[in-house]
Image (cartoon, rainbow, N blue to C red; front, top):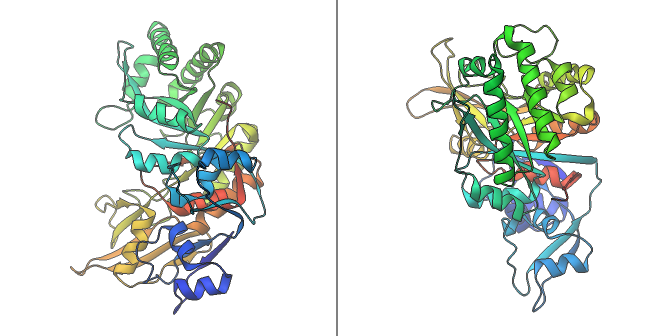
Length: 428
């Protein structure tokens, strides 16, 4: 695998000649929306195939996998043009494997709302170890707020992906409620009801495990939150369900702020089967323009986490989106809009601007002026920023990465992950 950054004057065809690969493959693998009009600074993932099989009459993806000693899921990963669909036709070329130097193994977790487009989900599932459904809530009575999740649970299992239930304090208005967490954390009887309802749901829905995401918990309820995690984990583990916990991106034990103070890294890390470091949202809707997950900031969180939690329990968060800020930025007034990584490149193409790469954040960005004269600054993720994050996870021997979120398909994320890493599967 090679990541190529487009230089002035280059085309798909000149790049293809440089690497000795068919231009159609560069276009197909990267799912280029306008291959005749590349953007200077745009990244392209170049894959070099080792074995390619031509489909013969009567063959299926399953029989081809058997003949080559691999799996259908692996073939779906290696052939993104199939879009997660195992249907093949006579004469079709199927990539068996790549010429690549494997850098390590990773588990991958993708977060999805229940209303995810099913075609997007099918394209993504071959690359996932886990799929976490966002989110279950709970009422002050202990009754769960249940999403419409049956279809995506079934699809996950069909693709050999472990479906994870998430319990959070998110309200119907889309906000994390510390009033709701207070009601739960100060009432052991209510906790017992919620825990039993969660266990019953895990069993009834055929989930693989549970994740907990309580944000903005009041600092004075830090120990109570840890104790609730202990109770939930013991009950779930007793039924064979692993439990993970989302942690705010801290760089020290005493980091101030409502988001951080109740998240006790060493205590929660000792109890939970794994944790998610929410290493994103430095650049966010109301922030000044900056990278969503600058690698120097991400690394600082990982370095602290490793002093408190075993590496084999840590999943590092990876964002799958960017932001577009109007300029000048005005504190308390400016509001960025979220956009997909592919939409960001399309925007740069539309306004004929070069994509730059920040060497510290290791993230791409660009500026443009819209038709109404408004100046903008855009930060997003591309193949190089994804590679930097996966390299960090591998260098520190982390358990894996968790993608927030998979609602919008980003081909380069999975080309990079599958091109140089072994994505671990579970015997589910």
